[in-house]
Length: 621
Ligand SMILES: Cc1cc2nc3c(=O)[nH]c(=O)nc-3n(C[C@H](O)[C@H](O)[C@H](O)COP(=O)(O)OP(=O)(O)OC[C@H]3O[C@@H](n4cnc5c(N)ncnc54)[C@H](O)[C@@H]3O)c2cc1C
Ligand SMILES: C[S@@+](CC[C@H](N)C(=O)[O-])C[C@H]1O[C@@H](n2cnc3c(N)ncnc32)[C@H](O)[C@@H]1O
Image (tube, rainbow, N blue to C red; front, top):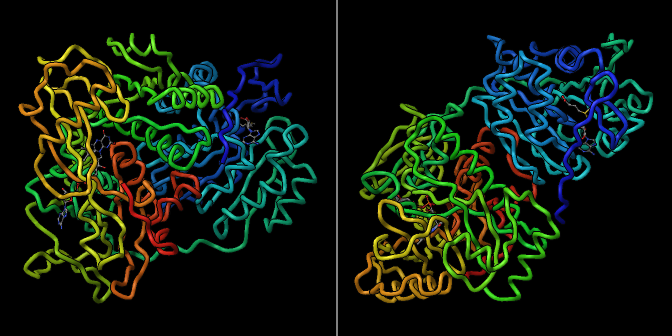
């Protein structure tokens, strides 16, 4: 997929003061009132709130997010409905999003929506292509930024209601095209409804051909008619399910999925061999989060971009909720390895033109100014990049769902088997530790040991970080990287790392320290002068490596050795667990709960554990 930079919407108004799009020559809503139009056409037109009442999950899909008026009106109606569905998903595609500042100006016209609009803008994503998932309690908004023709095929969801709200079909034909309507049909659940103010003959013909039974209803704001449609069938109420889920491993993978599942009312038991969470790879004192652009915007870059933006929203939410998170968006400087790499970095920014808040290329002098230390090359500057104490993220994830995640520490799991429709999870002496309908394997680098050999191609990548005393190093307030990284000081210690090896020695070696000091010298020449590798402290742990460097987040494919019904994996995070744990957990929880996915279909497929079934994994470091 090539990277198409987003073109933001232009803020403009017509003679009546109605928001207007010069590029399309059309208004965003009728001059008679945008909020009233949202309620009359889209909410009532889909027979809401009645149709979501009593449902567990209800999903609205919209074409054209615009100012978000339909979304805000729906949120308000759902919030005020005592019989509302338990979880509401709103998925909306938008090719030209407004900036948050322009949205603020536009939202001023609807004071009654002000608190909701402010919450929306507080989470408003950077204007970058792809999917962005925002949580507002049990309401989830998935914004798909890009052309509907490209992105609708990438949406994985079962839609119960459609809001068709492009500009007029004559001025915005793409959004009413056969291709778009075919995609809506693909997404539709049985009995799905649609509503739109458009009644043009072409639109009616296409929707009718797609199988919607159409009805004209009285229109709004001077329009005589509007359109409501319905597909045959009904969505049966789901049978009550056994909601017990055991999660094995309490690092960032296990705590992230436990939090996401508890938020969806699963009965979660989190099990770990250690005495508490975050004792494995997630126990490092400090780690970093940053994206990794590429010229061809490959899957790794797209996964990391979405994961990085999603993680930043999650961390901000945990912080806003007063949870015990330790992190700082100090900025990450990713210096080029050599002149060729520097040119690649420069080109990636020039061609993709990301928002400067996301990334920009800085020449060597500016890079040195940012670091406060001489450097040998320019590089990428990610102003929102951060350091984070991973144990605090694990603790905050658990604290976010108080009383909703049972924990079993000091409990080593030796294996599991499925009997009579439940999983029996066994400890070392063969005792059944717990029975559960579903199990998530999140045991980090040890995860493959929980299942028969070769079922899971995840192996341990040994890594050591060196712990540098702040007092023995010059000042540094940002993260600097170049084939390694060095962080600002946290509790008097900077982390510099990290090594990568295949052996299983658990303690740091002098060679590890020497290697890390060499990396440090590559990043900031002379910064570590005077540090004695023999006197440095370090921490060694094991990354859960996957063959293609992408995470595993999904159901384990069945095998003759282990019937895999209800058996899931969240692992393979390699050297980037902090960047993608939150999004990978949201993806897996969405898969388990049967909700719309937070990622494009091709990226979700790229993290499906079944992908290693067709071709045997190539192991490499
Ligand atoms: C040196 C180093 C530096 C790193 N730096 C960064 C960084 O800067 N940024 C970044 O994004 N990522 C970084 N990473 C990667 C990141 O730390 C990992 O990807 C992440 O921590 C993996 O999380 P996890 O939950 O999958 O595994 P872990 O944190 O290892 O957790 C696995 C848990 O499973 C438990 N367990 C295992 N087997 C069993 C069993 N049989 N029964 C019960 N419990 C079991 C363990 O006790 C452990 O608590 C680094 C990794 C290393 C090693
Ligand atoms: C009438 S406005 C939507 C108003 C919006 N529903 C609201 O509640 O404020 C139509 C929107 O469709 C968007 N749009 C037009 N063509 C598109 C396309 N091909 N893909 C995605 N969005 C598109 C426009 O940028 C515009 O924001």
